[in-house]
Image (cartoon, rainbow, N blue to C red):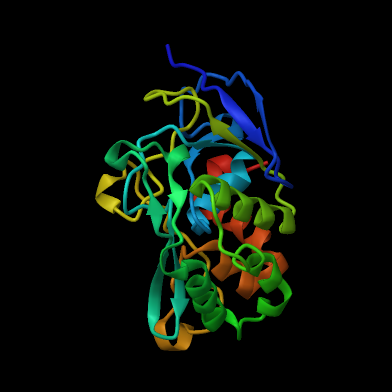
Length: 254
């Protein structure tokens, strides 16, 4: 019998943590809409549109933090479009226990003033986008000073700020233990740039929208959510729901 994961809660509107337990319904079919009311995801830095689509659909998001931290994933990187093409922004991290470090113990590294470099790259890439001036302060606030502490907390603060701005009321929780088999849709291994490791094919139906460098590089889909936010602004949420209708119609109906 699949185990019910214990979780602790982080408010969408603050980073204050408080412990509690939730019982989840047994998941029998990943394609059943009601089962997506809660979903298990990895932590992610300025997540991709695919990640955000599942967050918007599920409303209750459990983030895995007791896994052994895997390298070279979206947990500490995101992709944006720049004048020179796609750019991966990678957060340097400290793994206190080396390869045995669990995600909750992974710390932000001060190496190379990465927060300044990331913000400069974001600003250069999107300063001419339609909604950069409107939303730039929302993102820049997290890079104004050198971030410290656990990676997953930094990621969750960014995610929560974006969800709040978009009026997406998702309840974010963290696991308290690691379970290989869980009674919720499990996408921990699916949100990765290593496509050969995925069990499911990535979502492919992404409506085209104007991007600052689309004339030079063409439209590039499924980038970091900030690409969509700076180009579509308040229509970001509507775009995610339209993408859900195209990719996962059985989940987005109703």
